[in-house]
Length: 576
Image 1 (cartoon, one colour):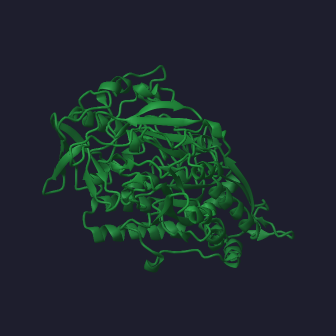
Image 2: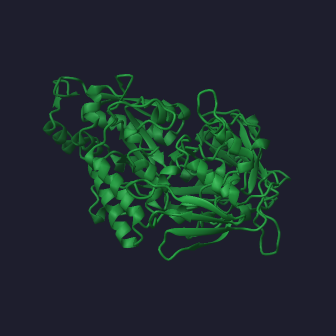
Image 3: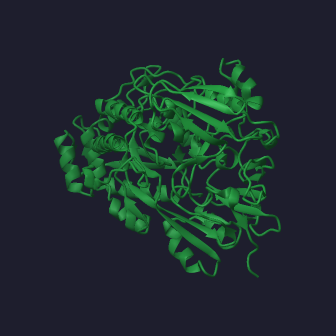
């Protein structure tokens, strides 16, 4: 998923709900308004679905192991090609209707529907032919997954949010005037919250665009504690839409928020206030996510118009050019100045906490700051410098491109400014242009009208969760995106040999059930990606969050964050 980063630009403080209240209410913040209430169509993180939906399984936020959720148990056949899940007895949707095997089968039918764009589908594609599992109902509580061959990521994939057939089936089977399923416009953010039917610990109660999303306790949620008390304990969660990190910090310090992601530029301030402010800063170590710069390598056309200026496209598609850019970025200064030392140099697309992460010591190429090496690579590749020191290509065109990121994210804006300055030192002019996040997503996934971008992905323990980034037709193959379902087709799209090799390795790694062999395959993907640099990785920030001590039961890790076990968190009245 595209990662928005931490909440970030000025707001009217009177709009915010106070965290202190007689009602059991947890108040947190988010970068921007949700883009959809439909979990199948979601492309961004954070999103509302960790509160409102669950899958058959879930990840234990401390151990990283798969544990039961809607399914109470599962069995795997000896050949690894059949999985049978048994649902918990008495499951209900947030409107009180029964949740059965029919809903599970329906969910996977929707996700596997080629007419419905879903980021999740790529992660289920099995083998070189990209076959999908066959999901069948055995009885009201049992569902069977039949696989064409053993598929290592299958169990973790069953975290997929289950959606209600009784509420959404008609929208899938009915086509609009454009011939597309009505499902594509179902459960948008203009849908009354009470019509959103979920199965998670909370359900939507209210949404005020630009201000807040309110979640109320789901009375039909299945979890109970050892004493038989229904969970979750906290009655209400408020998501304040805070478009400025400065405003979020002010709200947290004044008691208006119960938790805040800690950015490096205000870590020292909060650390000094930790005891007096009655909160704890949790450090989970290296974060699951990635931050990177990447170029639009797409050589396709629409209506005979190239997506990228052919002159610039010829630069971007040269490996030496991308390597020179990597050498030209001072990531150590980035760590020290922007991340205030609270980050590490990043050299892999696979999350550092993942057991499949390969460090540089295993032969993964790295690019320490070396502007001389950058110039050497550029000159050897046919570029030149004019008398004023500006880099020009062999045809005399000045090397200049536009770099975009999501506006309001202070960290990314600072990274963009530094990259602009760093590359100016090797004669490259960068026009840095932060954009509203929704506009940025549209350019990256629909119009494909962009040149270079700074962004991040959320990451995870299972690398195959990023298959949609690396498969050639993956929905997040952002550096060389093909047209998605329902979009205007591209002409002349092509993939490089190294690009094809990474895609093949992801297929092979998913087929392999031996962990060491899987590691070796993923290590090769990391070696190739670092050699050819479809993404130029920057800095991996530490997972830091401040949480009020009145929030009890926090088990913080980089894997799960502060709220992975929200169902068992409690609130106590602040002292005094």
